Length: 121
Image (cartoon, rainbow, N blue to C red; front, side):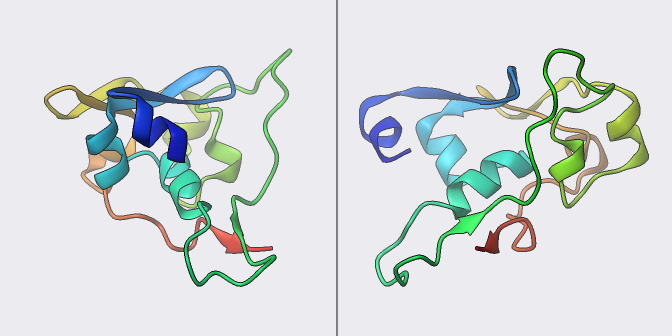
């Protein structure tokens, strides 16, 4: 992620073969909207983090040969709703040039990073 931040202008965050969020590097790093993006950013080691104390996203990547219906991140998402397990979310504009593929955008609940998503392991 550090390399992406320094080298790229735009970034697409993918999970299990699908785009979860896309935007400029500044937009995605400053205002991560998809729960997976929030988890990735929370997992970046920071100065002062004790050795071996890195955040992780609970769960496992779904089977991709025959994936379950709905959002592929649903089994790992702390904000999962019934809709997430039935249908694939559509990309929604967060701001000009910044999109998140999450039902939370529709409900207005997206935005603030979920501290419960990343756990110490």
